Length: 628
Image (cartoon, rainbow, N blue to C red; front, side, top):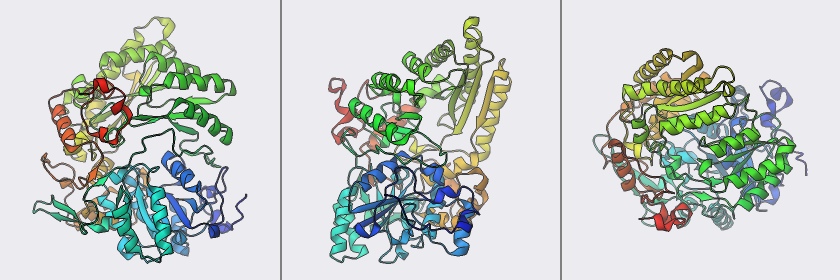
């Protein structure tokens, strides 16, 4: 069935904007339904430009899941790029969904996935252009219910006044229950406020911010966080899809007409990570580790490749090397698709013999570079962050890669980590130098021109629900000083011509830190910044740090409160009302282990009692004999 709807934008407007195909829909595998014949219209939004949003797996899973029901029509919404944004404001054109081209204000739900802090002003752009009210308190009775989901909802407070509901958990679990509740409530003529109250009371994982209030101490920290009704939960329990082989997944992914960031089939092989890196939020909030069944993966890979015509499939996971059936899965894809010139993407791999063997079969080693993430330059620092990698393993892995034909290696590091010293910083250059030295010490048969060792460094941002959520940040000038210190060390290396070093923007890091650990007071800052013209903060050319700092000051907020101050272990955090399974006691223990440079074994080696076993499955129950 073809979509015969008229486009929301006239031809003369489409001709004025860059990449008009972003706004017309009608892609291969797009779902087409009659909006008049469904009970619920559900707009799924990614608050960034089309090419970024169309690369996001979670959005595709929800799109498929919702559209499996005949009574729901799920459509997509993205942020208009800056050129169309201006035209829509000037012409008063409401934001529209791609499938039907209907205005978002006609929908029952607007679900926004919140993947990173730097998209917060784009969320306000979406709400503003949709003409439904930026603040939830200002929405009409017939406005869409605005729901937030994704990793940033694990501290939803900076965005609390803008959303009706936040969903804490994985999308496959209770959305259908909420849709059924909505249908019943709508049929009975219930009000918007009554529905939100029922959601908070009856649907687990749903947080309705308007039904909770925060009180503060004199020093600005939180005194208490309480529901305003006795019949709604004090804590919100994360919802987890425990059986990943009997759930929703896109087997006919949408195929964009333009190149998007991840222009390939994405096959999620497992969820969660056992490694326990102390800086990593995903490694904590997605516990416990759950694997997908090999047969399910093989069948889904076949269906996806057949329905899209993509020439690449990527195996997605936080730590693909830990997937127990990885050799079988890789061999299946190689045996069935190598002759069809379909590439296999293997992100998040450790550099070991098996990985290199597979990659040599699926990549052109002369053109490709190998990527791995030591995160820190010294063993002391890797122990602090619980990375579980020794320099010997890193050097050995790179040597195997060189012997396999590669001569380009990329390494990812972090600076600004707790307890970091100048020796740790300079260690980044020394580790890269040692890798290069090892290459040049190999027999000539393994050397193919000059080696290229590229180091890329981001600055550490403390995230909620990590052992480092108590960590202090430093001033942007100090981040820059550290980066230049390391850069100078690289220049002093014997093999400096084989090495390269680049680093992230320090001011972006500071803002991410403010938003990541912010409270409800930050919401007014986000609004004021947006009203001052800021959108697309994640894009360097549109990021205006000065505007953010000015609005912080005008709201009587000192950004150091959110970044550089020291936090006590008993401080109440804005996100403490959320239960992710992993306990605060475990996170405190891991913070203390970090300060003592103690390594905690990964979950496959030994259970450390983090609390995720409460969900009743996954890695927590696979090796009971190893549990304490």
